Length: 420
Image 1: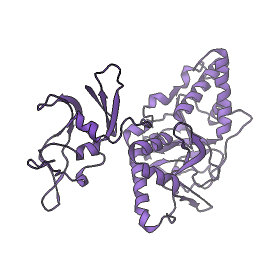
Image 2 (image 1 turned 180 degrees about the vertical axis):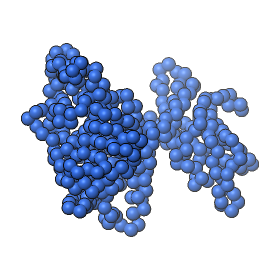
Image 3 (image 1 turned 60 degrees about the vertical axis):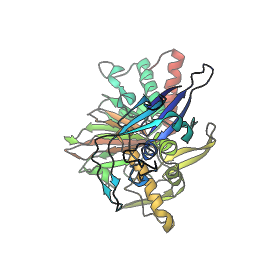
Image 4 (image 1 turned 90 degrees about the vertical axis):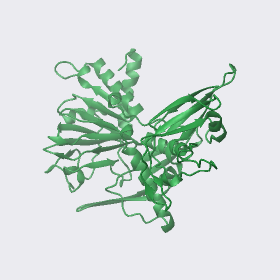
């Protein structure tokens, strides 16, 4: 039998390859914390005489990951074994207190047959990859399509909008470099001239900058230089705009970088790879979102992750319809029984930890003339705190208007036999 081990972000996949030509390769997935807890070594994890477990599950960090892995040959019987090398973790002394180990690395050696016998996840049918986190995947350079005067020919307009359609359909976000200075012109990159933007209680176009005088109800974080962490917009509204774009008029002198997370992918990852109970709580426990300002207030109650009535034919489960996530408009939680409240908070914390991992985020430092557009149902957005006169124009769009407009360009591209 030949064996392969693959280190995924949160678990290891061990492939058991039979030497029989007709046999299929089988695999099993193992959480890293499970592997570390079940180390078979006699160097602190098992008693040297009785082989009983000494390591306590409570000391194993749930976020632990091995430093490296390999397939070795057992020195005792010559059979294959999976070797995992870990950074040291604390251990408990005789009184139960945590003490720091003096070892530099810890090696776990698992005979392959032991892994097969103890596998708890053979050939998982459903799993999810990490959300997209390479900004190059979602970036479009407008200058690639524009003529010297900045205008687009008819065919180049079709190609540009086809690129937008494809990025937004696949990733839910697109970063457009070198788009130009006119926010009004940019609106019609995404919708027909007969359509219009969605105004809110802030106004038709939000000018997100300190000292804002253009917009109403500007007593909110977006008009300060504070960091605004990951969220979706207008969680307190019954009819939430499907898309928003931000047009960079002027970047900050220092800071102000934007970052995004494809929350639909993150939620699926939470469900199948990390903590299905947390997913269940976030899809079922109602949250009150409360936007309370000096001259405006709106409230809405909804789970953070709202499921649709549509059934996914692959999993026979309800699909995720919308993410409503906004720490700054989240009201006091009063719907959860006392004995369950801690569990709900823990679910939020598991979710939040995922969102702030580097391998979950798309990061973009926008320059003057750049634009970013994102799906407000599926993508979380944020910005770092900044200094200097940063100015972004924010515009909300109707999803149906956007898909109709970009879809028409995509169809035309196909009829012309051209591509983005």
